[in-house]
Length: 312
Image (cartoon, rainbow, N blue to C red; front, top):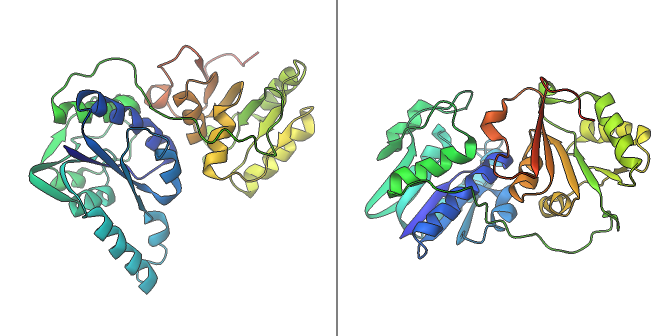
């Protein structure tokens, strides 16, 4: 059996799709499982030991220069790579028109099927028009966790029961010790997020960082843009021993959280990667609901919301 998964973004959603792969492999150990994903996330998907071929797509980049000769050539090359295989099952677990079009581009084997979501979950970006490209649409509950949603789509299409805790099947990244990595155990603060409503108050980050510094644990502060870099500098000014990191490529960012003693982060992709590895993680839900993405598969993962008392 040859299976294709179309889940192109975002970082956290790509991570939450991975247990679906382990489920399929468990029930069909001989299956070839390929994955279409945004080019920036190919190295992350490459850590999943059950994925056979990764097909990079550059939708984010292409849409900026859609009608240029170079972009059209890249799209043609992507389509040719996508169509080198005939798939028995193609999954679109994102439920968007753009991803369903990618699903439609894939070639099917005789009796092959295209499978997608029948409905949105609460607050998701689902687009109902995507169903016109499905041979089968799998319904899910309105408040279904992001991990469970993908697992249910695969189970419903392939005829097995959903059982057990999610297995992300993530191998550790390169164990190299990077120049920025301390010799002693460290804590990571994932303080940056695209939406202001998701932010945790700066004074709480500082109080927590000072408490950790008092226990001899340095706080590492990654960032993703100039605004987050400045916020990291401001936190470091008030947290003894805190380190503002350089810009990190994807695999170094994964290594950062995978090797941490503790990760404390907002509802962002790197926080979800830490949880996927089962690292001691505190997830801060300041705006988005916990039920959608909380790391409920490990006792090492805790949650804090605006309704909870401040962390001590």
